[in-house]
Image (tube, rainbow, N blue to C red; front, side):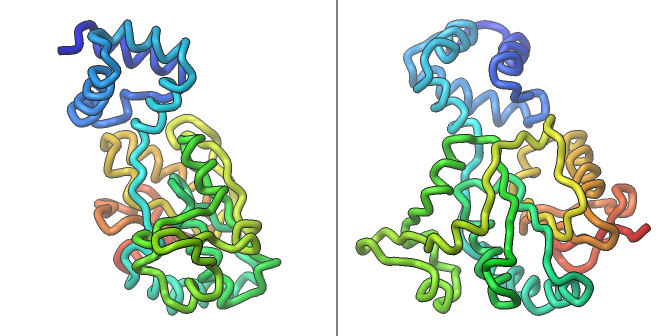
Length: 261
């Protein structure tokens, strides 16, 4: 059993890492953190904070463990088809290029999927995806661009053939020309400034881990980040219950449009 005050632990973690654990659902997050503390042979919150403040490897392990990294290319393919057939033509009718932000991008599957899809509409030289995540380690993995074959299962064959090199029976490497289209940056959705004038924000299967208050704050900030009539693409397990209160209108399942000004 881990001893000490979890409330004090959250304060110390915020000071050390700038991650606000108050915004995460407590029961779920506390259980995961206590499991990690015990795994490292430590029996108190204070002892663990002291350990990760001195040991970089343990600190990185904590950040990586805290972040939910479940990702795959073209997750929920039918939603990507809707993006291709409906939303992108609509957006590109008004803009020759698009400012796209992949928020909480994890291992890069999502922003790279966006590049490959946009390449059906324009040259790669005109594509730039801004991709962010709180986890620095995961961003480093994303920048390398090595993927297990399982993460490619939903990706159209044309993209696999055109943009990937098979390294062995289980590993693929994404092409450098696709990698060049993505700018990765560390970003905390709960405290950092958001980019402005986005045409499309993609943030999927992340806010489900936050409290209702934190969700509303994030959605409001996404709204402020979008151009009038810009789109927010959320995950298949997420739904904005009262989009109008946050400046959105429901466009189609999992797509929300900023109400134009």
